[in-house]
Image 1 (cartoon, rainbow, N blue to C red):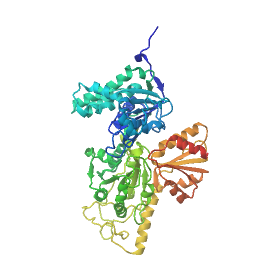
Image 2: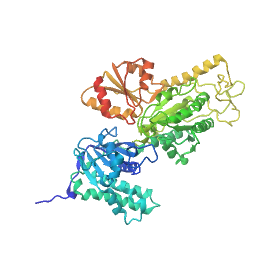
Image 3: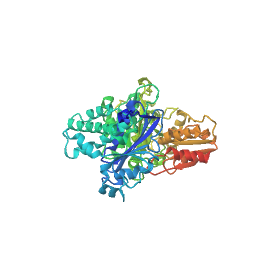
Image 4: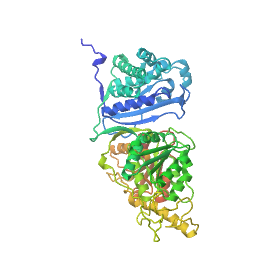
Length: 619
């Protein structure tokens, strides 16, 4: 008779798996999820993530509002989203279980930190009976682990003491998941050694706990026949890194500044979820980046306008309510016709709303949230990696047309992550700025509002340039001279000119690309972070042999020149948005199309099944 040991068990190979780490906001779930993600990226999987956490610095421990989670889907093929239903839920306490159990797929796996399921924590989570013993988890595979005792045992010789002892229990959960899903430990141990190089006892404790979790999986009967492996994905050749949207956007700004040959100035007031852009840019003084943490949003954009006046590539970033505070100065930037990038990382609103949750509700504010007639170009990023290209496109438009540009990201783009192939250095565009160097007036003076006949952009003259003294400001300007003017006809002309300049950008952006291989009669159109989930829904419908077309918009003002023709060529148009219908209002007003909205404002992104179901209803 041949006996089988746990070490002999071969992992089951799956093409994809969805894992959600969930625990109290002090349990380190974001860290565990990110480390699992990086280990999977190093292994070669394709992946997508969805972090979700409270906005409060420290919500009451053990309560439902205090639950933090991190979902990652890994696959051996090109995936688009973090997935609808987790296959595995790691629950560090009762509140985490209660908050996330409904999302777990039937017969999914639950990894439980059993020692957290004591009477006090059960009461905080609202449980009347213990779910570990009352049969409510019978429809799932449950792996129970006394994580706190095993963590204490693992770290007893490392030198940590007191409250530091249990701080590494997230590493136990991570180690256990590494064994269950055949992830290498080396990327995580190397990260720990680098992170805690100055605290060797903390590094030792984390590594010991990580290995304890891995060995628990290796040696415990409860995990037998549970080991799974997902092979590396076949991605196009190149050098890859895992990147979040905020990181990607920051790198895009740096690349755009290099393409323009300008120093980059970033003025910002810290606000979730945009703050990481400031953090990242502040690390890159070597690329000529200057960062300024202002005392408020008004100061941040005002300083950035000053930087633009002084010849910098000026950028300011914010989120939701911060854009409202910037609106007066944004109108000033529009009036002075200076290039300025204004990043708005949208979040749940209104007011301070839901700072850490996704929403796309600032589109109409971006379009109309200023006084007077003040149209501005709007560009939207659609994924973490796309934020890099969106930033470069916003810079191109701002510099070429001498105008502020609104760059919309959102919480899903900003905090989500995915593999990103590093671009070739030679792929960087060249839009070198040529400042005015000599007077352009008939009397030897400099006339700041002499315009390029094709773009209507005025010349950019850096203050201090001899002979180019000129006036700009918020009061209406006389055409050409820039002198203050209250002349009615001049105001009409300047208003029309500024509007035409923005509208004319439609001729300088690519026509909208229609993904319609089968001659569909139904079109799905979206913008921003809904791109991956819409593409996944369209893919599912097409796999059943049903034709459906798809368009996704990067440019929201002006729209691509061919958009009206595209919309009118379909019998049915569906517009999924994480708001109450903002793009659809613009499309109906501009093109008189009878589009149908699919709207959601629940602090959660769309599931693929939600959009898939709506498409099937409409076909």
